[in-house]
Amino acid sequence: MVPITPVLKLLEQANKFLSEQDIAPEVKAQAKLAMQSALSRLDLVTREEFDAQTAVLQRTREKLDKLEQDVASLLSEQEDEK
Image (cartoon, rainbow, N blue to C red):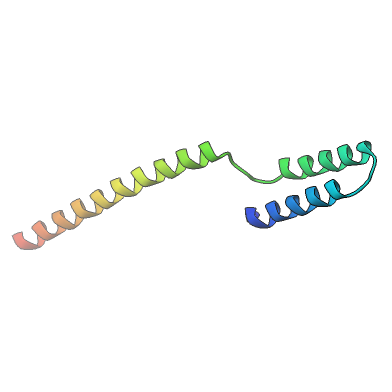
């Protein structure tokens, strides 16, 4: 996956360049379409999807921690019985 920071910096620079140039609106529109096309091919997710997956991961970690504690406790009890 491509790190998002360099992509955002590139888009900022391109936007600044296009804003400062005295070029035809058609060229600006084509440049904008090219940038949008490039972004659509990247493996990006929305903030909402990222937050939802983060919450799922947190719950999964909590369950895993609980299961690890349970297994350790059962193993300890088993050792005590020997």
